[in-house]
Length: 108
Image (cartoon, rainbow, N blue to C red; front, side, top):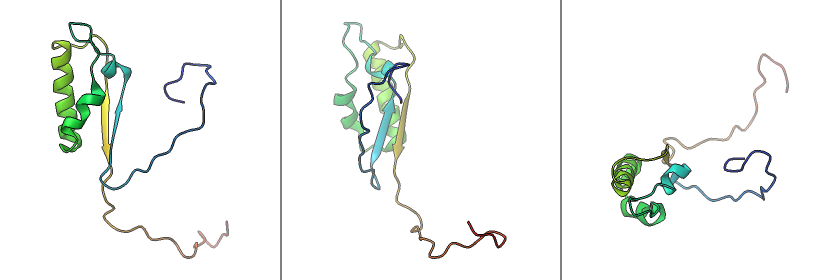
């Protein structure tokens, strides 16, 4: 399971959330939230991310990267990664198969 040290059995039941059309998911490593400013303060991702929530995935990453580098004084002391995923509406509705068609006449 992600985020747990090797050999840890502290995992509880997984949380599930709806991910609807237009929703955005930001994934990031600890290098982002543990990035420190020259005064020692951590990067306040939770407070900053909302400022650019309407910028689209590319815009959000652009603004967060710029803001993160400004926060640390231009250079990160650790590796950091961010990925933004935005759910787009389906281009065509998904149709359920009413009848499974056997491949080469074989039944499964």
